[in-house]
Length: 394
Image (cartoon, rainbow, N blue to C red; front, side, top):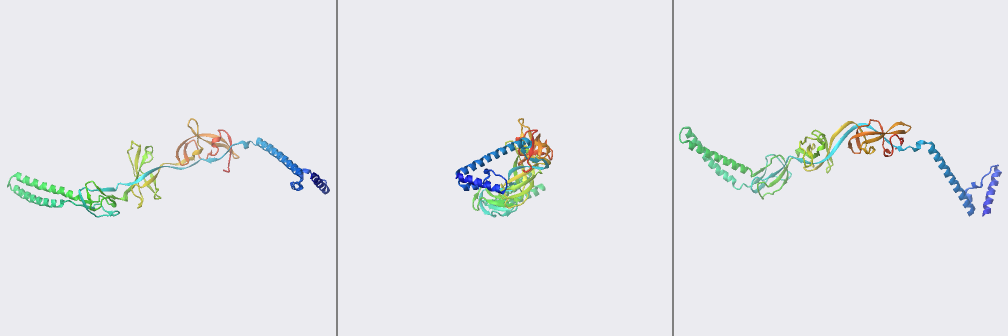
């Protein structure tokens, strides 16, 4: 097999020399021809030859890279990205949770002891103020009043006669005064009995809707027992507690965005009342926000989320919170770029003071100006005065 490989090499040289006077090294014989020779030693020799060539090329590439790194100082510069500081309107919101309520929710109770003989309304029925809703048996009170009226009428007649006689100087003064006192006492007693009789009629104190009836017709009731609930949904509002730190910002007249999460409904309103009293147990005060749109699904005690604009700056410098660093003394700072040219710049530390946050951004109230290039990615790995390279592709 060795002889065949040598013969192959000699043949190739001879053919080349016949075509011209060029020479070729045996190492340039193709891998395919070596493989076709099926000579194991020739194949191993070719492999060693190629491996040596590979090692030599790798060493040369390393030398070239080392020389490039030595000559090109820019290749050592840290790669960073930047964000531009811009002046823009900033609206800060606080979010609170409250419940829908109304001052027109009335639980109607019995004021008389007796049997509930009639209920004139049904649940869901709309009623007017003063409308009779139910009737309680008066237990014979009407008959007593009728008898008392007869006695009062007699007392009235006696009084009128004694008055005429007294005006004619007939009879004694004491007779006149006794007749007058008896008549007035009878009238007052009837008035009190009528007041009691009026309590047997259950009337609506406000206009609204019968939400629930607690006692069915025919049951015995006692004074103070709840009979039904009456609701007026025309003046609903949301009530919530606000932490005292917002006392100067969350005030009457502030705009409020309302969301009802279980209804998927939103609306806008304003604070109509802010309490002047701070609860010492939880350090909060109460606000009321009217429900400005009518919706049959909005009911008392429904959960609502309030988004209140407590602060506005029409010309604020806003930056991402994650580019801010803090030193051991608690001072906040960011890194900016100066002397920018050819996508390179010098790092400059700038001390700042921050204000309110909203999501991932924060307001800078001092230290920065609009249109400054601030280091975003790479801010944690650079130092003041260091030269860096700007990655424009990020």
